Length: 123
Image (tube, rainbow, N blue to C red; front, side, top):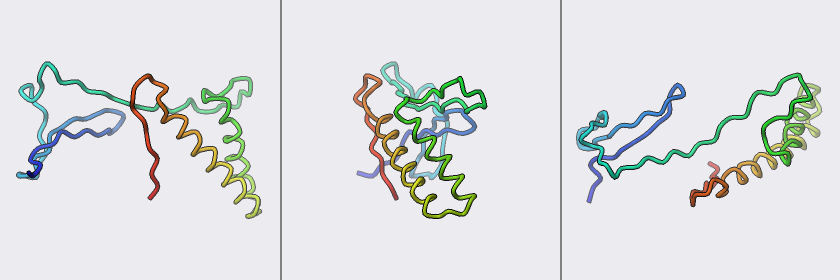
C-alpha cells in the first residue's frame, strides 16, 4: 500500500513548521483543525546551543566539564593551522573530532527520562 499523505515538520528561522504532504497531488497543505484530534500529541526533542564564549575567563562555558579539553583542542588546531604546522594541526583536529564524537554520544543518551536515543551516522 502506497503512502498517500504524510505529516512533516521543519525548522526555519528559529520556528517550527508542520504541514501535510500529499504524494498523489505532490503538494504541501497547512494542517487544518480537522486534521488534529484530541488524542494527538507532538513530542519535540531539541538540543540548545551553548552560550557564546566571552573574554571573561571567570565564566565557565555551560557545557559539561569533561568536554572543556575539546574546546582547547579546537583552538590549538586553528592556531597550528595559522602557523602552517600541519602535523600538529592534524593531531589537534583528531583530538577535537574524538571529543566531539564523545559529546554527541553523551548528549544522545537517555538523560531526559525518555526512551529517545540518537544514533550518529556519517555519510
